[in-house]
Length: 130
Image 1 (cartoon, helix red, strand yellow):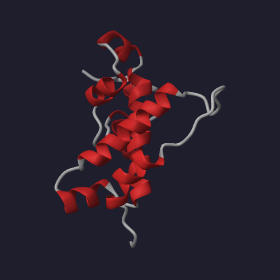
Image 2: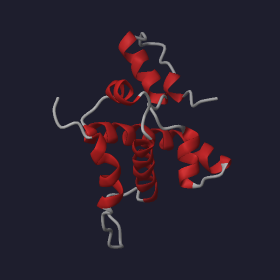
Image 3: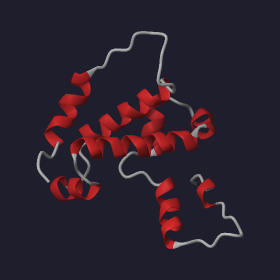
């Protein structure tokens, strides 16, 4: 089953095609899955279910970030590779984990980027021309 909260309808407003597409897109990730995110974060079923809406939001945001960094669409990826390469899925999961573990933009500890982890996985897929 999936989170149906985006499908809660307001009686006074008609459901337009644009709104329906938005609501469907709200619950569907392009290449990450809830199970992958749950495994990456090492959450049990109870923890994951309690934060399902937030985890789906992080997943969709991570996918969008990966595609924007690579200057590609999901269609481009499938046309060129036939699937989403594991490296892109892994980077998406790393972004989700970072978002989940550091929910605020500041931290009391010194945070240092780990550019190699992202760069080595993303560089082969970055489209330099449009």
